Length: 485
Image 1 (tube, rainbow, N blue to C red):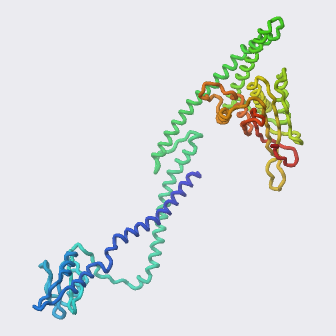
Image 2 (cartoon, rainbow, N blue to C red):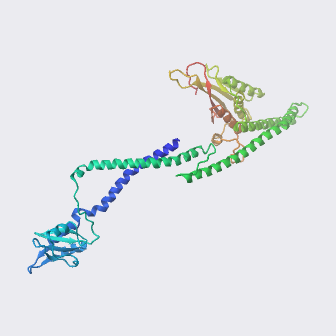
């Protein structure tokens, strides 16, 4: 609906901007077309000039100069000179039409000087007391014979023009409202359909001003829904395949792990054989974790993995994840340094305990996987209170930051950018090579997103790899504390 109102508003603004432009454009065209009709550049001026160029010769005849003849030629006119008192035509130009009288009464002169002689429009000038009359081509002028206006009308002309403007404005507004209502009826369902198109199935009635656009929206909707059905079918098949493979591989993988562990612990075997059994066991564990991560990522993406929200202590969750990881490090090659912000105490939040522990464990396992020679791990928990409330008191809601880093081999800038920009665990990097840091971290991002948090990946402060997790938490009553740098 907001889009529809915005469209109507833009249409109205366009009308408001166009009307003054059209007014001044038409005014300019009017001036350009009527410029040659100025009073000093018409047939009346020509009649005066002909009277000035007409002279009486020594032979008692009137003669028109070359300039006067050129003036008549320019206007395509003929001329007569009517003598004062007698009304007789004492001179006329060449080409005088036969139907033109050669004698005029006072009444005829009064009529002809303001109108027509035998349908020829006339203009008049003077030569002394005599009258010069020019007759122009019948299509040269249109003359208003009774050009007298009421003085009251002239005095009230501003008021009349204002009433005309108001009437035209009201009429234009009425037309706009009628057309706008019709356009709105056509535009509104089309705009609403376009806004809802990405989210739901829509059908717009193909009727009215935008019937063709409505038809196009319906066709796009059909294509989108068909693509969604195809994609959903493909995703269901993929999720089913992943789930089936995860289930089918579990039993034989467990058997491989069991036999490899027994061979590794069998002291009767040569050291070389026990070493190979250890490699088999470690690679089988890696495979088991990979299949588990793949299955979990698929379930999280399609909401098949329920997020069991409960109130928990985030500090205890992190300690438990660190303890579980440390218990697996029998050789002590991956020591963990866990630090909690001083005075933080219990850091309460609503979340899924197992998924959050899985996220932290995945980050720690990622460091272990990519640093086979060993490295030191660092885990920090800090929090700050939220913004002040209306009364100026700190709110109980805050933001926790979990900082996980190592001093291992780290990642290159290219790998880091790939991790930041890879939104899906099934995306191929295009190189045919598995990412050094990949699926486990994408699962971390999925779990944190499911809890309304954010993940940041970067280089570690000691040259290794850094993962920061930000989550909303409920802080105990304490003063606001900034996150440590």
